[in-house]
Amino acid sequence: MLRLLSNGSRLCDGINRREWLRLGGLSLGGLSLPHLLQSRAEATEASHRATAKSCIVLFISGGFPQHEGFDPKPEAPKEVRGDFGAISTRTPGLLVGELMPKTAQITDRLAVIRSMVTGDNAHSTSGYQMLTGQPHIPLNRENAGPGKPNDWPSLNAVVQALRSPRGGLPASISLPRRLANNNGQDPWPGTDGGFLGQRFDPWFLDCDPTDKNFTMPGGEFLEGMAQARLNSRLSLLDQLRDPLDSMERQARLVSYNTYQQQALDLISGGNARKAFDLQSESTEMRERYSHTKFGQSALLARRLVEAGASLVQVQSISDDKKRPNGGGWDTHEKHSESLKGWLMPTFDQVYSTLILDLEERGLLDETLVCMVTEFGHTPKFNARKGRDHWGRVFSIALAGGGIRGGVVHGESNTHAAEPKTDPVTPADYLATVYHCLGYSNETFVPDLQGRPIPITRGKVIESLLG
Image (cartoon, rainbow, N blue to C red):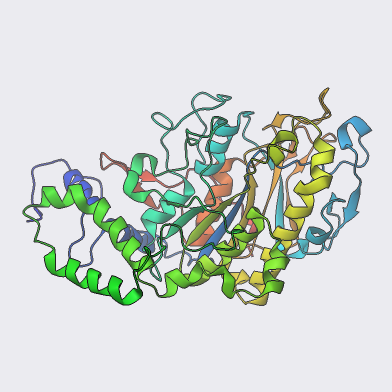
């Protein structure tokens, strides 16, 4: 039985720490940790309601260049400004790089931050900051792996803890591949549940939505198994489940049972399974998003939030060995060639299409779209005609879900090398995201020892809010 009385120490809200751990792993009469945390968040969020029902994060892995992106410097020397010019946008006074003509036409929906700072030039540790809002210990540690003391949960995991599944889908999904280090094996720190525990990891999907036979990952029926036969097996499984002997046994099995139920919900059909049916989209719509993994992943993200997912993170990842830098954004060589040849045209098309598609469907006002990256690129080119890592200032953009469009926050100096005004930390960016989702700094989640931890220590960027 659940023991509601105990001699253990209590938290400031009166909940026993041991029972916090039990409630974190158990479900009794509909009471679960996500429900408990959500109720608690709603009680502390009386000051404002969520403007965003869902969130899509486009994570440009490898570093999005500020000079050719949202912060061009046309008056700077050529070795700084690069090989491309700047163009006007729908936002008065805002210039973007000439390789972003489609994005230039939607900036009235965007809030651009030109003064993001991590102070870290390593992919995994600067990325840890952007994913969690916490500085990595130590900074500038390339190929860092997860684990203490760098076990703060990702935005994805916090959302997984605070929000219940909807429409048969988990609250948080990450695709089409997990962010990983150069060896391709160790994930970045800050991609998982961290001190919340594995049960709040987002659903990591390793998939290729461009495949003509793409379906829900792991959801294919075995050869010869029809839907009716599956339903029969599920019915038999329900009949064979024995009552659990003790709370301790249930606590050990709850993660398995939770994921098992989610898998059964997905495989057995319905709204969640239909979300993965990209073939139901028109040819025109699929072409609008581009027939790239990034483009079709963004389209899938839109379908998943429509179906009930609270947060979907899409990684822009490439491993095309025929192209410089593996075809990705880590442009240490042939920077301009890579941007003009494939990187910027794809990004410009996918990003603008996602914003407009959500708007056309009446979803932009309730869907927060975050275009982020782990850092920018150096003000000057290296000897290989590339730009290297730069975490001292870079740009990101937010749209929809409570964000005021046509806004530029912060300014970099003449070479886009340092912030000139209003520097923004990853904690501030995430505090703003949480605010749009309906959670303030006074919202807490418990670590594995039951200690209440605030979800963010940043400050909401008020100038971005609608």
